[in-house]
Image (cartoon, rainbow, N blue to C red; front, top):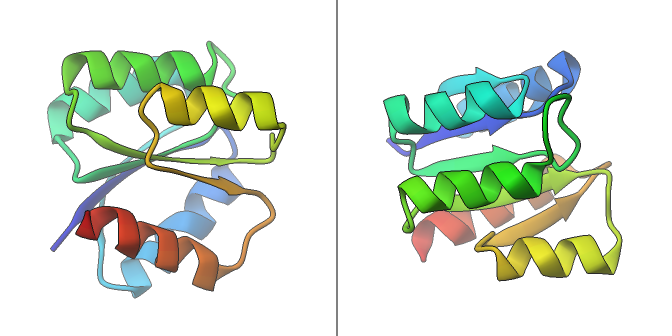
Length: 120
């Protein structure tokens, strides 16, 4: 079973993602409301995949992405954010994100991208 860490400052968004991922057969190994917790949980739980928001209360998702990949360069990360500006998307992909999903999203889109990235 593939293990996923969800990082989003919105409790509602974390719950929604957790429900769709667990319903699809994935194990959610942790939920982080901020960047500091995300970095700690990524080290502790060693997930197969991290879903990461760009806007976090303590730092940016892009900084967290770089921190996670500094600890584990092979870590697969998908950005899930309402921020869809091309410059941010490009920076995320250049920093090692495997995909970028813009909110609002459909469950089908999330599951399709998660499945694809985990298969890589």
